[in-house]
Length: 111
Image 1 (spheres, one colour):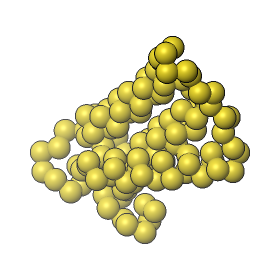
Image 2: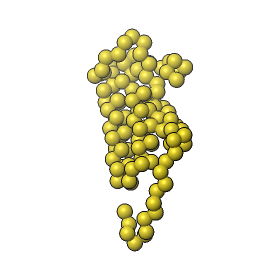
Image 3: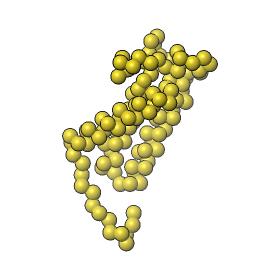
């Protein structure tokens, strides 16, 4: 997708961007590979985790996304594209590999 879209990183597109990571000349930013991997891992792992651990996985994926923008290497749309790509890849993996059946918790027991 990066070669198809060919959008550079924020430092190449905007003035005054302070990057905290060094990339080669012509490095492309859309979609964020880190966001894609974080989203894919979260989707696959959440199929096997309890709700409270799924929330933690979502928070960790969010940290990755915010971190990539903080270091100045991605624009928000790069991250949204990476997240979308990762969710699709993770869902495809879950479809191919299958997911465990969740047991229903009686309502009087709660979470």
